[in-house]
Length: 256
Image (cartoon, rainbow, N blue to C red):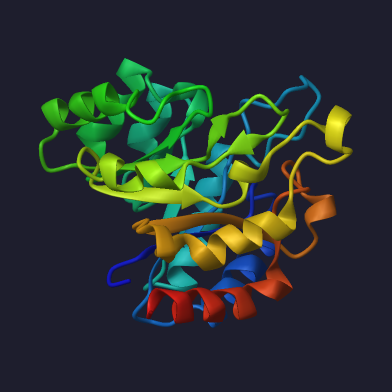
């Protein structure tokens, strides 16, 4: 698919060496003409447990991005934001700002992002119906008509302790959003109490390969060299070593 968006990277930035090494590996997989963004969170502020790992924090993360940009000036960066006061600090640091699912309708945060960025990726919470974020797009466009509003679909609650991705609503969503992106990894989240694991890496890989068949404008996938050691979402993150073959397959599917 022409102009397909690829959002790839670990769940958390973790530390400088880890982030730069991950960036180096992913960049070697992607082609110069690919419209890809390196993803990592500087703070996992919505952890289930108060004691869950959260990441390096914004000030250290800005130092890491500065070094990453000097090493890879052609790579674009994306990160999520949780507080309005963080948004302006990220201008010129990252290229796209992402609003987490739990904050996808938070007016002040959406408005502040639209004031400062020309592209916003809004994660759709699994408890929201397919069109419930239209009002969030209205907030974006009323604040900044030139700002692109992307929706990142991470599935919907389906009643079986896991998530369901409704491929049938992609074309409908594209009437309202500038881009509709499939969150290949978070869309596989499930109940550990029922399944023994909180994600399905194999299913995430299949979503990554097949997304173009359902007319998504892009994919979001968390990848990690050792997911079991990740700060969070280890059960659904894709193995970094498997990314080259998966991207090759996805491009073949996209060329059909």
